[in-house]
Length: 374
Image (cartoon, rainbow, N blue to C red; front, side, top):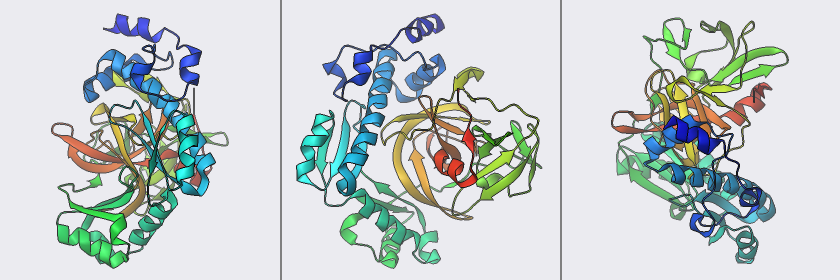
């Protein structure tokens, strides 16, 4: 299998393929693998998404084009932009707009236009209303998030009554909110009896991504793993900043250590981080953690607010990649692009689960950090 992977990864993608607008995969010859994609990524996506090798390669090529197309249309559509997502097999980028006159511009980029009643800015405004709702109403809900695929904000709780109560307490437009019952019980993935890769006293968490601030090396991780001033071992460092709840991010200065552009992939292989462009909803994503290793899934929603026992965390990305206690702070990566650090979730890797990550670009911006890339 590895020999076949090496031959595939060594091939070069035809430049014209990457330059063309996103269209259904069957409309083009099957692409070759991007040589920058580690074989471990292809292996893990085959395993966790139930795809063949060629389906993985095609999906990754489509996702790469989709991310570029989404960035272009987000800018050109302006106030009418309603969000974007990939369809089920990642062969088509769907782009929402409130302006019928914008459909031609969307289609010219190879995407499919979806007319919606609300812009993404309006949906984010509804999220802000719910984020400001009374704490008692928020505590009874498991999570809420912007769902661009339905042009609404979803509120999930253990009971329908609790979900409806939060919507009422926030005073939001009922037509723009979908409430539902969930069995999810989000909690931070921190294992207080711990093991590698780094400790905070007797607790264990996972390194996110290597960063620098000036000449000082370090790493980003989850805020619930430690407070400013907390000491770490393996690597030795000190939490310089931490935010939890509200956010769930932190950075640890680790002078004397070597900040590398790598994430641990399947079987301990090294996956090179090449940037931090956010991938659209529907994209494949993998995460690395000290408990369950390398696990993959898809991005379900951006901008989710989650109620943990310790309080609410906003601005998270929801994924179908599983995780377990001790994976907190670990890396989320889509292709070669850093996405975020593991915050928490529901379920586990035996029966499936849902996991949330704190977007990495926010952490870099807040603390003035530079992501270490290859």
